[in-house]
Length: 139
Image 1 (tube, rainbow, N blue to C red):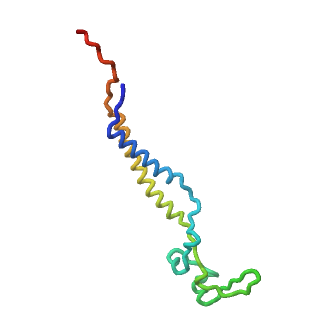
Image 2 (cartoon, helix red, strand yellow):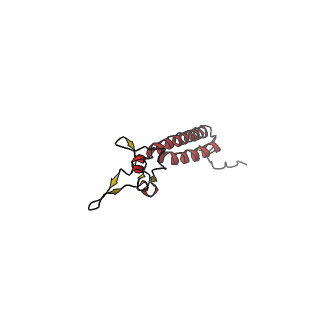
């Protein structure tokens, strides 16, 4: 006996394979480097909503305004640190992970619906009789 594919089976297979194609990368994604790229590092004013840097208990901005921070390399004389020299890179893994959870749950639901359609299609497929040779007429 042969089985014939119906719409539920075809739609179920398409949905399952596309759902798994989106779900597997989300499940396999690790917490590797999710830092802001160096060329996109933000300055002190742009980062004020996400970070507050304290130096000896005083905000970094106050030290920069007062000119109390100095920097110097090997063989250089110390100079006052300027506000435009301070940049921040953020680890965005917490935000990326939250986004992965949301889309992962949505894709898992989508894939589950595809599995249900596939099962309905496979269980409800009518069986067709196999090909048989035409009966010889006995006239």
